[in-house]
Length: 57
Image 1 (tube, rainbow, N blue to C red):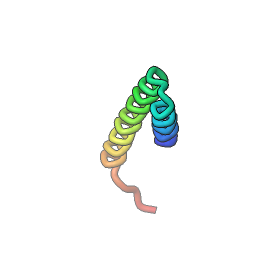
Image 2 (tube, helix red, strand yellow):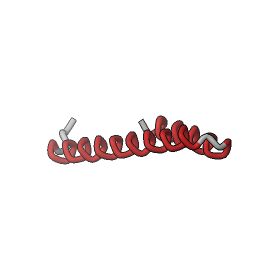
Image 3 (spheres, one colour):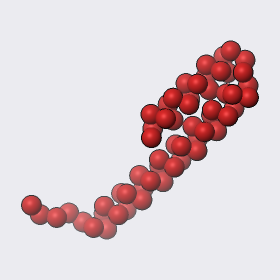
């Protein structure tokens, strides 16, 4: 998921340099949304992992 964030961030930077403000703004908003979704999913999985504890093999 973080690769999508980097992809949209690069698109936004290139569009910003070339003067396409609308595309740059949309891409940065998508990148922000995906980044925060990835952070939330990471935190949820970390909490679930800690709640389960470790199992012995």
